[in-house]
Image (tube, rainbow, N blue to C red; front, side, top):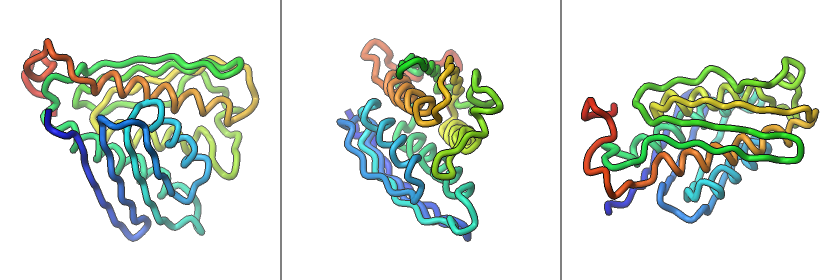
Length: 202
């Protein structure tokens, strides 16, 4: 099987980001976005998704983390899209539920070619605004939106939680995303072509 790898560099007036990805890796990660909590979450995503992932980002963090956070999602999405190529023989769908203490995060993905993400559901307005080192679910939503639209996936995330800690709510989300995306990108030996009745996934 052809190696499903990609290297993507994107430079704007606000950010300079390089992503190297091996879809069929072993979960090795080297992440430096300048946003500590996002680095940790992406390490978890990589480890549990078994993706080899390197991200180096420089951004206008002196202004805020918005541009860097969103652009990392965009470039990571572009790397997945490039690495998956024509998407022949992939399983296309993936889902995972991951618990952490009294939190359960459920993630469902469809590599459909049509990017869609609304927001992480089940999060109260109070939790959505809660921040740790400047990061919050508001920023996570922006990250997921950039990722989903650039890969071209339908991404649905649901959290059931009564826990007040941001880290404890975010961690199972990123773990479940890694597992679900790993499932969706796996090769199904029974599938000889693109997993769509249209014969193509953009």
